[in-house]
Length: 344
Image (cartoon, rainbow, N blue to C red; front, side, top):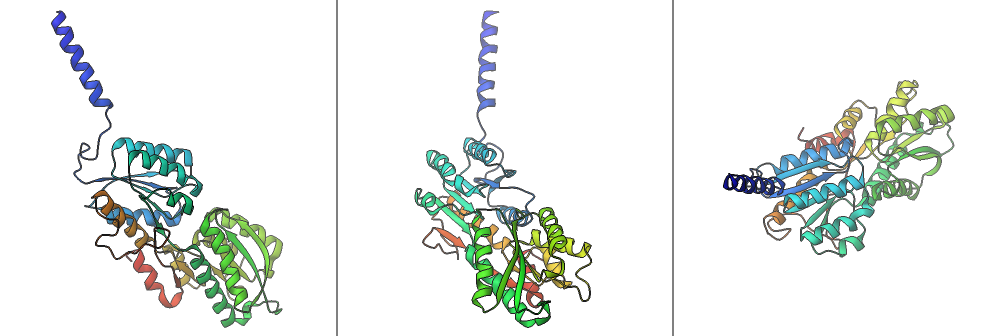
């Protein structure tokens, strides 16, 4: 009887140890190297397309564990801990808060894991603190410069947009998340490019819509009530807010013959491309989700397989250890360029 109890006790203890040991990617049934991937929030319009590209590019190459950080940095930190415990080979992190990069890097250092940040760029000091940290994204100022040039060219080509004939562009601006490098740069350089091009401007309103369609609509509702026909240009840091502004203007009786208000966004997401095709949006700036997702996986795949980060790839790194995917102006004349980024 005593012998039987001892055998049972050993069996239970062994089972418990196995059950409590986190599975490595190989143990989870996949022979592919594991990569832990976060998205700062799944319901962000643009990031949903980056996520789709990441999943497509990883197929047959990597075993992804892809999670929604739900715009919660504390949650993302816990997710990174979970990736490390699981035994992934690489971390691919779309930060909730760029200021949290140092904390993520410290976790990666302890586990001796390479980390590829993307879309939200960490401070250079954080990147320099770890030789196994890289970034995939864009040059933030470029999107603002391209958007500003698009606004300038369209304004000069359509003198009737200056509704009060004062030679000044009265504009409202929907800003993204305060402190976000893209929001700050787009806000600064879009307007600066217009002014440097010789057009006088007057800012009627500038508030954050937090990249969100509903918030963009709510702000535009308020601004229409306050300024009405005095609004001569709507500048949006992204297409989600631009589409919210469009919905608001249409509900107020605009965007029909004789009551057009020009709107320019950034990202060139499919919903915005459809509105450009309809003549409802002037244009957008392609934030190439397809190639950003591809670059993330290209780098992660090399690193997960013990190769140099750029081995066999066409990407290049700048002095900030970053792969920069270029932006592109999108209007009715080159919609197909943007559609190709989404496989359309």
